[in-house]
Image 1 (cartoon, rainbow, N blue to C red):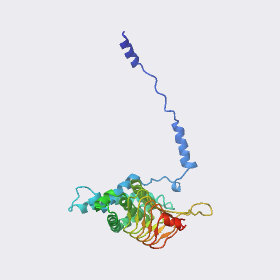
Image 2: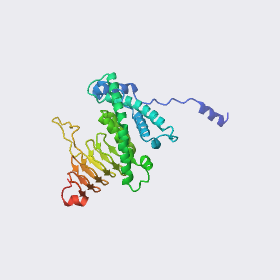
Image 3: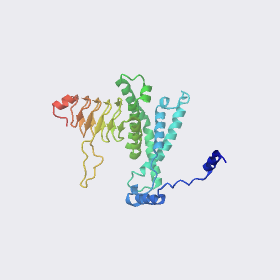
Image 4: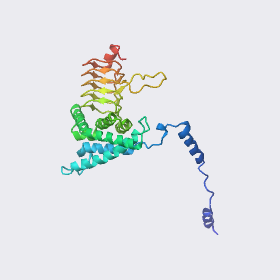
Length: 317
């Protein structure tokens, strides 16, 4: 037998099996069950329930956008003869899916252990009211779209803004999320906002109150807190923060939630890039806050606040 044949036989000889993976699966499963059920149980009302699906909610958001602006977010073959059919079909499908996601979300926000039939009825009522608000939401969005077109010299058309401006994408998400938040679907509203946030880098809490003709230019890094109130024709640039200055606690040390703690911007205010405004302060109508200003005090209508002005007046904070 030649050397080549001997090597072939050696290669065919069975080798020892590889060692096991090394983890004790049964013990790990038992320890995780103990954590879930006993030591670190975080279940709402102690019950196992299905959470809303982020993927499904993202699809619903796409469907709602297509129903609101079908020639921009809808199918490419839409024409005058079939646009209503497309809107009706798309909207019906989105609302059916939305009802189920609202039902799931309510199970985690209601204090009482509601029966499934009650949750379904409440979800259907919320979705009906949300659907009825869509025409007015579209009207607000068109005002925002016009504000972006007229406020940005680089904007060449409405389609460019709808398809290519992250600020517009974030505002659409906010308007839809705010309607859900107002109707009581707060958990789902926050999920809608976060989907828009993940796409744009713009974080708008659905509880914020924002008037028409709102424009966010560039937008990355903008943060708008839960109790912010923004008037009409307000413009923000990138990296603007409307945040809270203090977080009051109760006698046990727990944070007090829901109290007004974010700024109020009156009509026709402009906040330039990198500005930070903290606390329940009021920026008066027609004011302009310069780039990188740190502001924790109210300013009267018509104010022009720059870094130099804030430092020279000793009122940065």
